[in-house]
Amino acid sequence: MQRTLRVIKATVTESVELASYRLRDVAVNWYESWELSKGAVRQEFTEAFLHYYLPPELRRARVDRFFTLRQGNMSVQEYSLQFNSLARYAPTIVSKIDDRVHRFVMGLEPHLLDDCMSVSLQPDMDIYRIQAYAQGVEERKQKQKMDREHDRAQNKRARSSSPSSEFQGGQRQQYPRYPAQPSAISPHQFGGKRFDCFAYSGLG
Image (cartoon, rainbow, N blue to C red; front, side):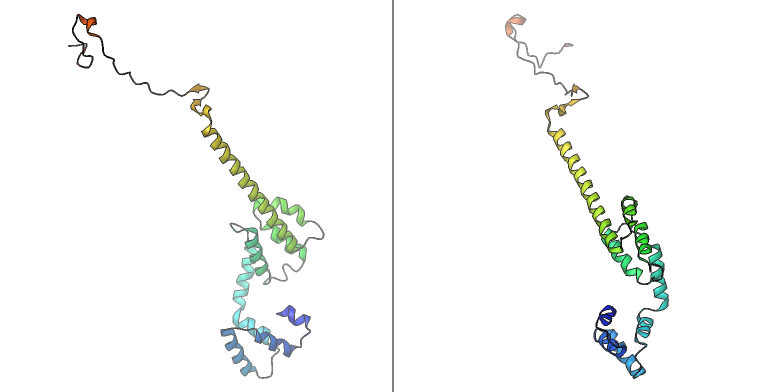
């Protein structure tokens, strides 16, 4: 809204009118009450609005969050959104573009830090370019990881389906041997008496 008002070169009174028109829900009620209490004096609109909806202690808390912000488990895109949102509460700390770029890069995860650090030193680097570059590096590394996992899975399936898988250490796997069923013996081998191999025992 402030950028829009600067572009159209709105006066202070016009700025308040246009900004209040964009308010919604409970903010409308707050503005109407504030307008009745202030009457024609509207130059303090911004300070009063921030004091009511974003008190100093909350702003300080967000500045502290900006100081300790790290990527952690977030994606680069999520980290960039958090960084840009919280940087607004610390304008003097990251007033220079190179300071803002450096702070963003130092919050990245180690596997992205080395790739982005050298690029961030380029003289024409800005915060949006370094954020886009870091996101590209992250996507490339994720694709490489997925390709490696896919190759390992294919190799594992190929080994399991290969005929040579029954060999271990250059030797064929040993399978248990079961005794063959005894065959019938002809009667003439035992003087004309039929021999029942299932009833006969060596001890009987």
